[in-house]
Length: 486
Image 1 (spheres, helix red, strand yellow):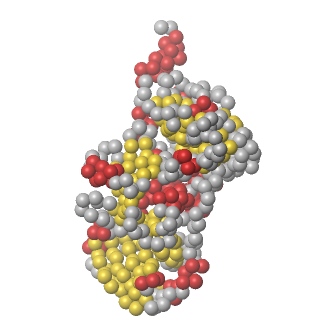
Image 2 (cartoon, one colour):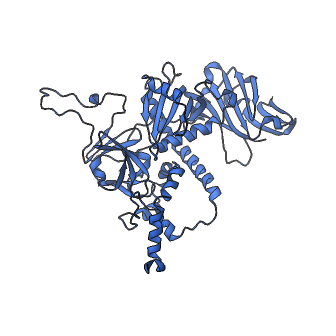
Image 3 (cartoon, rainbow, N blue to C red):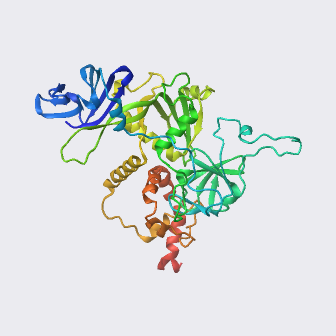
């Protein structure tokens, strides 16, 4: 019975480790399953046949002299146990590990360097015309007073203008996963509905209005840069989900990155979906930087278990959607002024939710919830490099494309319908758009793939296709020979 997932919490300060094993099938379906320390290795032996064993952990892995295993628990398709050792080679563990450092938040271009245009990341429609920005400034995170963001005035302040966060026409402010622009620069290239900004061509949610509709906050993962030979297509450098989480944790708890989370260890994430319904994610951080041993795939023809050290954030989480009704727990969190709150992109929100939900499957059901009242679920967020994030994205795309194999040629009329905008009129396909050539470019495609990991909101897009059916039918009749005679 093959392993589906494996996670080993390693605690050198306690000289112990905690192993979580997830199998493809429930353990009860097998006649006998044992964990055996044999020939310096830890094996899973099934039905008493040594030939059906699978290597889990080398007895001398990283110099560990494993003496015994304890707290052996079997639940469903999970097996968990603890092991103790007296020695470990931390230097070898560190050399073989994956190290991900937090990078400063920087845009992919500099002031007065290039003419930059912003496009919708879904249909490549230009939503912000090209501009050589004179000022690029970091926007207040929301945890500080905006008045402290600016230099204090000196001398006579009677004629001084009050501080304003509205950027000028040639200014761009940026934050954790967004940019702030003056509302006037968007012109008529977008659609504004109830304070939300949508792409005029494909109705992709781009951002929200702020500062009394004088400025707009555009999500970085909903946009891309118009290709320039020397520039990548993403707005920010290192635009991975790992970097987003590291920066978010640093904003929430700047002084507790390398320790257990004590005191206030809770945070609330908010995202507005394209249907303008808010989703919430409750986070309770247990450990910021936990050593984890994970089984990595090797290209060797011999099936060999290779363990590699990662760092992870161990946490509890729970998501409240628009269809879930449990206001007591959510209201209790919102009423606590000590819990920081962050509004983030819906696409990053969903990507984080998928990652935590997937890693939650490593934890047995008996250990998954924090309390019976709150029902937050235990999970991990593994810090991965940009290359590992890219491989993960490619694997997810392959899995999504598997059930869709086969020729799917859409008629021309149906392709035109997909470009219908919120005004009920087909957007012109002859606009000044280089999407066909840009999409075939090879420059920065590797990095750009990271920015297309955000799955579309299926229900929302289905509603868009069904809008204005009568108008589509009338247009089809007018284009047909019979309709021309009417």
